[in-house]
Length: 267
Image: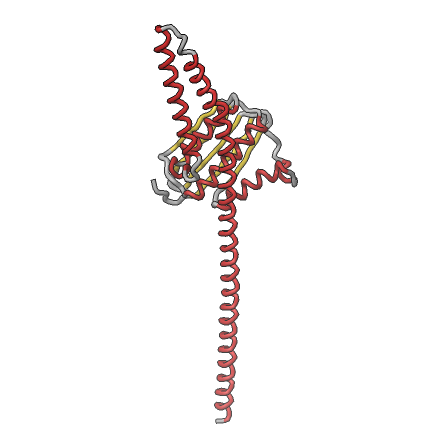
């Protein structure tokens, strides 16, 4: 009898210890889960804040670049067209009848061209024009500006049916494209620039290739402005969940590839 009582007591004690250990384990697990959950929420909040700050920065940079393009376009293109129209009009009074009609037609064409170019510029003043035009057409417009800035042969190649990724992501992508093109103009000594857009259901691929002098990628490991600029673009790519790859060969050129996972993107 006494033996049975001892066994019962031992069983109760063992069961109690087991329950306490189990309870302690559950409490520890819950506390650990709670800490990790709070850390996840903080990191998510910080990432969202960084994303929003990057969006704002991209908007401001695009706005600044747009104003530079507009200034250059007005000075180099529209101003010249209107000057020719003014010259035609100024010489009409003393023109013989056989040339007057031609000058009138030429002036009409020049003014129409200036109006068309001004309309295009007005569209670019809106920060929603990338969403309105679509990324592909916005890139085409940017390439046309690059072509006017120097003696460049430019081309855009598309593979697959274009679709919209996400307005905010496309904004950051567009700013990255502007940065890359500006770097090519400033440093590459290139004659040819090709932009490839690959539209696949699972991913969007953007590749910018030039045939410039290329460069050594080793300084990317150093803390200098050259490395910081590319690392900054890499960080921007990470914010939108994109892959960023740059390759370069001396005297052959440089290629930058950005890959954005899309899942089942809507057309």
